[in-house]
Image: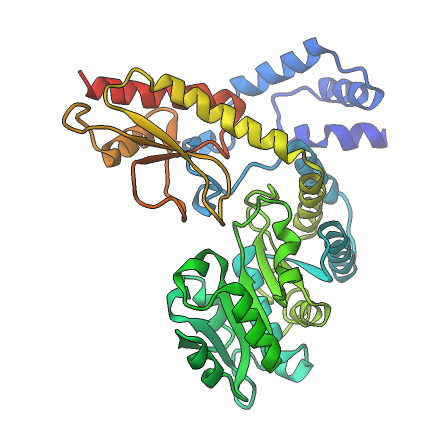
Length: 419
C-alpha cells in the first residue's frame, strides 16, 4: 500500500480520476506492468483536461526565446518532478538537508562547496552578505546596517545590471572602476568584495583572469555572476578553477531545476558564511530567501541528471530543430538564415532570419507580435551575444511536438507578408 500511495499521489488532486483507477495504475507502475495502451489512455485523458493554467485563464506559451525567467526558465524533466514530489512526503531537518545537498552538488560538479539558493540573484545577495559578515553572528544580525564593516564592492563601470540591487540590499556600496590602475587604487580597508558579470567580460577593460589576479594579490573575495552560463557543463567548475571565490548560477535554466532555485558555488569558508545569512536562520538578511526541502531535492536531481546527460546528442537535437525551421522558411522570397551560438550565456545554437522588407512586407517586430498573439502564443526574445541583427529564434526550450508548430507559424507569417 505504501508503494501504491507513493506512485499514485500526484493524481490524488484530480477528482475526475476514480480512486480505483489510481490504485490500479499505481500498482502497475510499481510492478512494471504499465502497457502502451494504459499509458496512451492516461495521456489522452490528460490532454482532454484543461491545465492548471487554463483553468485560471492563463495562456500556454511556446518558448522559442530561451531560458528566460519571465517565461518560467525551463521545464523540469520527469525525474526532477518525481524527486520534488517525493520530497513532499516527509519532514526533515532543513539545515541538515541543506548541508548534505550542498555537499553532494559540490561533489558532482567538482567544486569545494555549494549552496542551493533562490535563483542566481539570491546567490549574489548571499555571497555579498558572506563577504561582508564572514559569518560572524553579530554582523549577520546587523545587515543591512554595515557601520564599521567592510562594505564596498568594486565592479567595472561597464558591468552594471539590475542585479546590482542584490548587492546594495546588503548595505554595500558599489565602487566603479575602468582600468587596472583605478582598480588598484580603489582597493582599501573598506573593500569587502570584487564583483564580475560574466556576460559583460568583453565590455570591460579588465578581463576575468586579470580581475582574479588583482583580487588574489590583495586578498579580496570575488563573486562571478554566471547565471545562464551552462552549457557547457564544464562551466560549473571552470570559473572556480580560474580563481573566483564564489560563482552564482541559475538552477532553473539549462540545469532544468525549479525556476526559483540557484546555486552559489566556491570557497568553503565563504559558502558556509553565506549559509549563516539565509533561512532557516532567523534574524539575517536572507531570512526571506527560503528554499524549501522540495526545491533542494529537485535541484539536486537536476544537477545529477545534467552532469550525466549526453551533451553531444543534446547539441545535435538543437541543430536538428533549427534545421526543421530553416526548411519551412526556404520558399520565403529574399530570406536568408544564419546559425549563431552566443559565446557565454545561452551557449546553444540559435537561428537568425533576414529578409528584404520591400519584398516581404513585415518587420521583425511585427512578426514577433503576430506570433505572440496567435494560438498557441509563441514567444521570441533576444539574448546577449546575438547582436541586434535579424529575427532570433531559439530551439533550446522547444518541446519535440512544438518544433513543427513554430516552423509552420513563422513560415506562414512571412509567406503571407510576401504576397
